[in-house]
Amino acid sequence: MPATRTTLRRSLAAAAALPLLAVALTACGYGSEAKDDTKKANVSSGGKKLSADTVKIGYFPNLTHATALVGIQEGLIAKELGGTTVKPSTFNAGPSEIEALNAGSIDIGFIGPSPAINGFAKSEGKSLRIIGGSASGGVKLVVNPKKIKTLDDLRGKKIATPQLGNTQDVAFLNWISEKGWKVDAQSGKGDVSVVRTDNKVTPDAYKAGSIDGAWVPEPTASKLVAQGAKVLLDESTLWPDKRFVITNIIVSQKFLSEHPDVVEAVLRGSVNTNAWINANPDKAKASANAALKELSGKALPPEVIDPAWKSVQFTDDPLAATLDTEAKHAVQAGLLEQTDLSGIYDLKPLNKILKAAGKPEVADAGLGVK
View 1: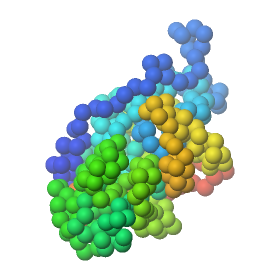
View 2 (view 1 turned 180 degrees about the vertical axis):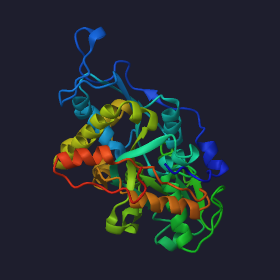
View 3 (view 1 turned 180 degrees about the horizontal axis):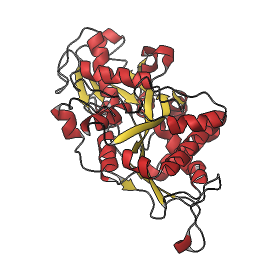
View 4 (view 1 turned 90 degrees about the horizontal axis):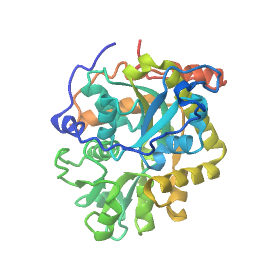
């Protein structure tokens, strides 16, 4: 397998070393258990005994990770795993999830494209594979309509992104560059002030007037709109067919090698979850909100979750060509050195599942394992 030939810039290497922020949600996990715990049979829905007693799955508590939220909440992933227990963990940022994957604290993760690219690059192609898609879209530029009425009005304003080098940060920096404006990627200073602000505090920052807008994922964008902000741009309009990857499924290469049957079962659960979400959008929205309430202690109000949910598409396709484009945007922004992403995808297990279900297979844009 070709490995990455260059390394990330110092800022992203440092970001990947952030302290681990995973929080285990349950001690017992999910999944059916035999009466005699010493003789638990890990029998999947296909009637086969699986090779691991436990699979540790990481994801974010937000709507762009609803495949994980709903799949766990409704037991759709556990159903495919039989007696293999799901142990979920939630994360606040991509670098901490990558750190957890590298440390073995999780085996499989739902994560954005930039952290996946960074993790693959930093490990020289040895840490992870992308094995499936989860979601597209769900990212908006929202602004204070009293200060910003057109896109050109962004010049001189303070606009938040979630984190230096994260997926939305890269997208906004690329958009700024295409406007012909200049911003120093590291400091965020320039024709537009890019303010890196955690999504949890962005609504308070907007309310306090310390930012004029934000390029953020859902539901943060809709939370700002509920405070009086206006959607100035939906990022999906910048992409062919209005589709771009916002959430992938990754797996540690070690776990994939040792437990391919468990990985396949999780993927089958993900495919079934996406099918259920798309067939039952209102029930799925309610399920995702129930999961968010369990995680945060507070459900999203209708004025936030309704518009947020509509802007996210759930798909098994990892939209690999758009990940490759996002990597190029990071290079152009000065946040990533030229990187060989060959081997970042292994879509063979997913395509096996899709073919068996009579669904079209998905492509890896030439970046799959050979």
